[in-house]
Length: 122
Image (spheres, rainbow, N blue to C red):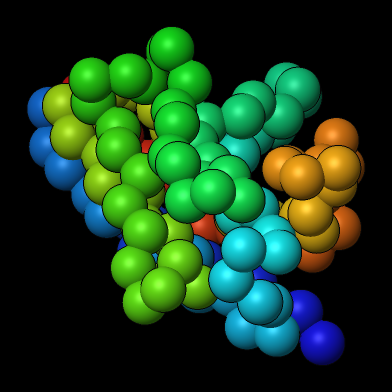
């Protein structure tokens, strides 16, 4: 059974750094995509970063240059390294796993963690 667990959230001052970790179990390397999303209450969920079937990482333009996706443990974990944090980065951050779909990441991710809160203060 696939299970996704996030950790590493917390409160940090603007300009600071945090490292989030996503640990996935019950998946097979090369058969799943693993990604990060964030959501603020009342707002739509926003994609942040992912690692695709081929092991290539990418991040959203809004966080490019500040956030990096760092795979580890044969891509069964995906850290989100966040630096130069801004107040607007405050959100609940979720990790999710999605099964291989036509050779790469699926349109829908089936397994989600419970989220880890990131709060950035000025």
